[in-house]
Length: 462
Image (cartoon, rainbow, N blue to C red; front, side, top):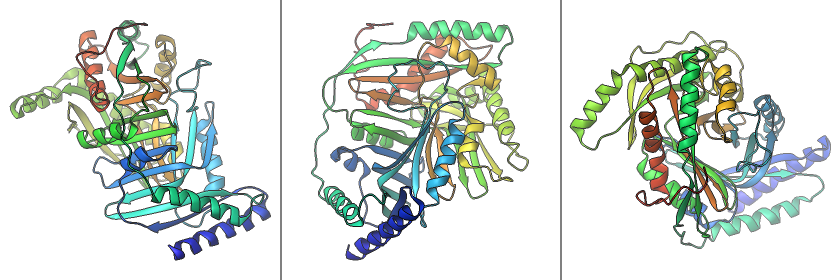
């Protein structure tokens, strides 16, 4: 630890000199190897903001605690504005540093008061402490925003105190709250479905994705973010696990199968995921369900629309993209999806955030044509999607990173918990099947929250 303290001091001294010369705050950071850590235990036992990201293969896990730098942006240009602000700060540090970022689904006609007020339309956070595991290597990065108005010694004392708190965590138990449903969202969903079918019949859209919002009120216990995330990590093996928790009882988390974009140098990876069927319990029934999904015209049409749109969105930035003619099956614990991996080689200097902007929303979450669908969704949906269905992920100061589509999710806002699920509507869609699909997609989150799925209370407000 003495060597670590020396290195941290050197980084802060260097940032302090730059801050004085440049007349603005400057990021300082230092990374060192540590022994293995338990991210869920850290979340459970620390009273601070938390940011979490884990890949489906479980080789990459990142947990951010506290805020060293918070950037925000709003309006239709929120991606570009956040990229510009991040580009100013990421050059401050000589070593690799990571930031978590998330965006709202849309920026128009948002209500003045919303359950999403703490999130904004675009946010990027460099955590004060970043626990990172890549394969078998565990590291801890400490970061702080250094101003010339405060002495180097003051920064060192603050960081030492905070590190000491993390080094002496006392295990605590997370209670399991009880829940009462106050809105099931069914009537709103039925109305949205009828309007969506009308738009398709009028040939105003080819496909449009409508969402359902279900809201619960919970008991006064602190929300068990750690327990819920661990349940998702243990049971949703093919999904990304994510959390954005800016305050103690405010957070957005979930388990999504859908990667939006991954950038590593000039290599890009994304995927089309659209078309869903319930996963049966027996192997024979599961094989039959896979065949049914692969040969279902409605689901294949919905899937192909997504593949086509993703390729079109990336074309201005990449070499020609080749994809397989037939989708694969992506297996989650409760559902099967049609899945087409898409790889590309970048031929421009496009940033990760600009690529995410070009892809968002894919027809899997918005519709086709994209702009028309998003505009019409503002008219037919009567709630704020917030960050549901939007890009969430991480980016480093080299420009690499990964964003997912934030679905299969829940929003915690003090005593209220909102669940979200969406369905792609095309000309052959049937209402009861789509409603059943929303239930399938919400079930992993309900299980993680330890709902009594047979006794969810009545609908008080529709």
